[in-house]
Image (cartoon, rainbow, N blue to C red; front, side, top):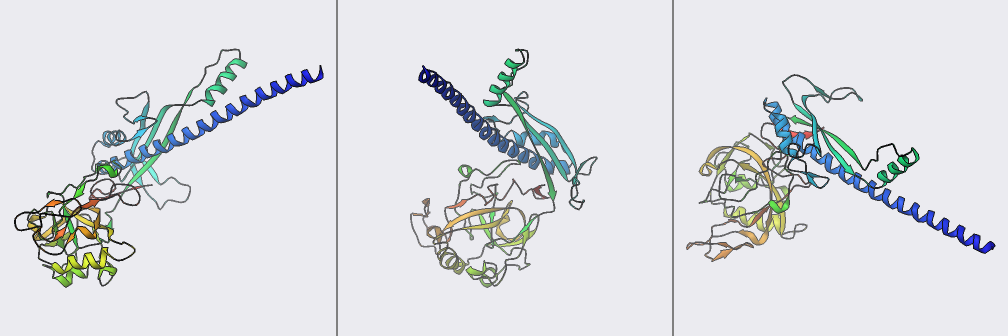
Length: 371
């Protein structure tokens, strides 16, 4: 008889342990799901604030732009479109104000108020994020309370982001070449609030610095060198590529002098000294300025952004010899052959994963920073 009671007790204990393990498993699922969704909602808030801040500085409808930026991103399984799905998602409030990072520690550097503005703060909420364990506990509490309480199966998740419109950023470009957004290249133009998706980035080909198609030009990177020579341009290459020091800074809105001269030696230098040696071993990324139009690759033109491109050694043509196609993407050559230049370059995301170049973090009149 004693053994029978012990066996029953063991069964009861096993059942309790199974219930406990099930509860812990459900709790782990809930924690993981809520943490992942919280990251998604933070990304939405970041994108919405980033999208809206320039519009706010210009006195436009920053709330509408914030909503549009949020709607390009997903959270909890759907696009965060507050107009199409107001019961699921909310951006409230969307506030324009001023951001002062000189305030004392512990004091919020953002203050909503009247224009002029230099910042936007967005509060994003996924209003009904479902869970398992919380619903079980709610049902248990409801049972203990006599069955009169409500049973919760979801919870809201709220995140806040503040984007600040800082002065235009200056960067040291890697090559004295500018890409022309108005040419025939397939340059992806990022929209405010859009993250960098590598699958959306096409091949940029060809980049001929002696172009017939006006896809790219040599430029002086703002150093004031009119019609720069081979040696002038070589000095603007990175030091390990033959440059003679730190590349000069160039920024949005800055004027550069463009040139389409036949600089054969520069392509040979780019291929043999820049891209071929270790640690690049034939493939290297370069950040270069973007012009709205090349203007026939002559005279002063204005930088409208930057783009990072991947160049392969095998895609650099150093002469005008006649071939039927050239490069890893097989660009067709005309009767007179493909001109020297860079073929089959690829636009790439920058290390942070945001869109590199035109758009995203770089809006011409200001650089958007999350604060």
